Length: 370
Length: 107
Image (cartoon, rainbow over all chains, first blue to last red):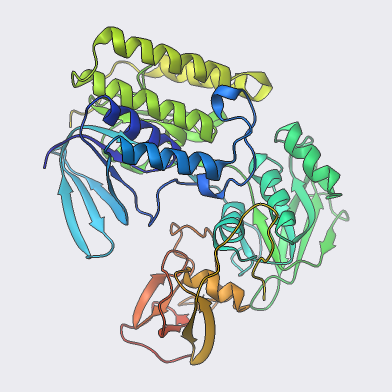
């Protein structure tokens, strides 16, 4: 079957795209490599904040449930355990079906990539020991699987992920011994920083991890103060008796599929590194290929959802399912929401970076034609 | 045991117990949970040893991306334990190097 729109990735961006394209009347196939949709939403057990229009006060898990219901009602065709392994020259999307072990080709008129981001790592002696893991891994085990990955935990990185995961692991019964950051200030939102401060978790700023030690598992970790050029200052080492070290050192867009399709990209550190270029409709340099969510620049679940909606509306419009005036009305609402979400010190930096990306795209269709 | 009981926010339904065999040892797991979660709950943190240096490896990304947590599961090596659910009677073996198909034996 030839679908109107094929979407890769069923997190907030992919779900937003699927719901909006399907609501407009397009036939939509949503692929996800996991056994459940929702991406990272079902790990977000904290309440979102911001404005009422953007699920302020809602927990990620509840937003996820609502989106799943909406996708089902809109008639989105969903395939789980389906990993996209290739984008071939003639527009064929090659999918590996985990359950059957089969490789299946799908063709569609439009492709929306919503594959998200991957967690960064930082390497140091002992970083491959069991017990050193990404903050996202610990969050998945604690909040989804209901198992604590460790009891005494050192967290590297004071961005929002590091702060939120520290709080959630404390809720789950773990002891966070410290949060370490190389920068002189806490990187995440004040709201989250205050929450962990109130728990009495100490911050070690201008510090980095220098070593994790143990036999078959982490038994201790060492941090060290760093100078202005990020070099360790001898004699400032501190030891912690911990069984787990979490890395919360940022996220990078998963650009592999998009680059395979020939989409142009640009290095934008404010959005997580290599970021796929797109226009105001989320369409890339390859006509008919859209990106949204963290792949189009690492932001937040709420912005990912809005960008997904935008891509869904734009794809449906270009297929003739929406009148231009109708589509413009929908898009104006979404653009307004995105502007709202990109306010404040953190939001404005992201908005500037996003606007810069818009100017970088020469034109839709300037890349390889699928 | 490091199962989280009485979480202030997340409510979890009671799940049936199933039996898994890890390196020949009989262990309890919860129906439908990921192998890696069952192993952590049984205080097992080393899942495999690397081919050349024989270094221990465990969970790293937890979402099926990094392939660090692979083990021999029911005779299939390089199975990602963080995204593969347990099954009653499942036989799981610590992987040494790249593992061998059909290898059920512990190290």
